[in-house]
Image 1 (cartoon, rainbow, N blue to C red):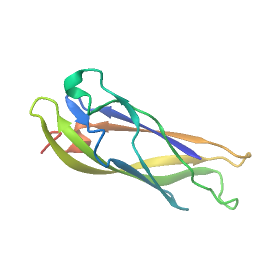
Image 2 (cartoon, rainbow, N blue to C red):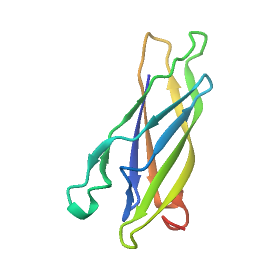
Image 3 (cartoon, rainbow, N blue to C red):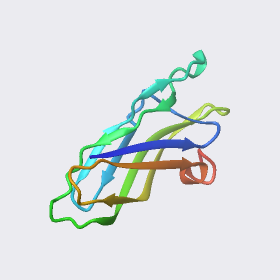
Image 4 (cartoon, rainbow, N blue to C red):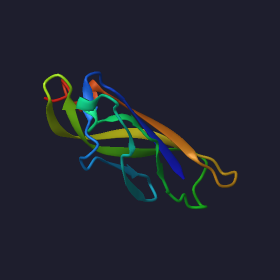
Amino acid sequence: MVSLSVRYMAPGVLVNRAAPNSLLLVTPWQKAQAGLRGSARTEPQWADYFAVVEPVLFKVRVPASARAGQYPVTVTAQLFVCDQHEKVCRLRKLTLPVALKVSVAGPKQAALTLNVHSQDLGRSPLD
């Protein structure tokens, strides 16, 4: 199984909790999709936005014939991001490459971290 943590490193950009945000993990063997879950912000005016996004657990089977090593995978994120100051929201679709390490010793879990920065969202978060 693959656990994917998404960290938003874009100050002033919020991710809408009510929108259909999604993550798609594409490996050489299969695809897996999941939505985002997490806690709401505590400020009443920002309660519709994530404060913390929980790690997403993808159940991806690696064939027994796969050799140990690094495999290229991609994560596509569909995010409804909002500018905290302008109060404008837009859909952003990001496709980012990630490396997945596979080992041969028994059932394993792989952990990946995807950091989403302002430049990943466009020249400015809402261009």
